[in-house]
Image (cartoon, rainbow, N blue to C red; front, side, top):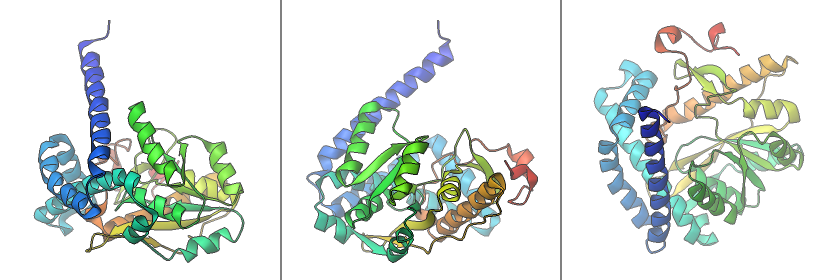
Length: 321
């Protein structure tokens, strides 16, 4: 007989799955009849009450912003960023559901590719390319737009806990040319690169198992080593790209030149050093556009307690694998 706390957890997760399914399928139906601008305005409207209602996550965002910016930013500014982040996420979810109803022309007008030649040049090496991005702006529409531009792309994604919601999300991605790989599908990821295709990875979330401790906003964070490990193994270039919302409601996918990787021959050391460099690239983008990152995520969930992490840095042995 399960304990009472276990039953409560099971009930809570069940309600969360049902809620996610209702929101996903209800939103899909709603977005069919709204324009992109109307969807974005709706996301703005829904974002503020959502911020107020999510008490636990609100505290999480406040802690994360304190950790990231400390006394260099006022409490009022941190609160503004937290609210803007929830609004951006609300818009991202609705825009992604609208993807089902967008024409190729509408998608091209909505998402501008800036610097895509960096990705094209990387693929000319015939070793594939790892597209490094983060949960910033609208990463989903950016992936669809990259596929539309003719780049064969697969993404490694965590699926929803609800099977029906996961199937819907993956169908929306795949209908626009984005192939979805589950986390841990190492062979599929390697095959993608060996076919000289693009492998999209978002390593800005906490990973509970198999992660490396690297510095992220001044505190050790458990981070997926996948991008560095795949690049070292295959010779694929790592090309950063970040989706940034523009004042006119469009999105700009900004590509950066391929990263220069450390290759000493010590695979474990090189994986850690390059994972740290990758994390700093992501941190730099978040510092530039803090309102558009997903502060709601528990990024330091699997990291050491604050007491043991104080003073740790990228060069601290405590951060090494």
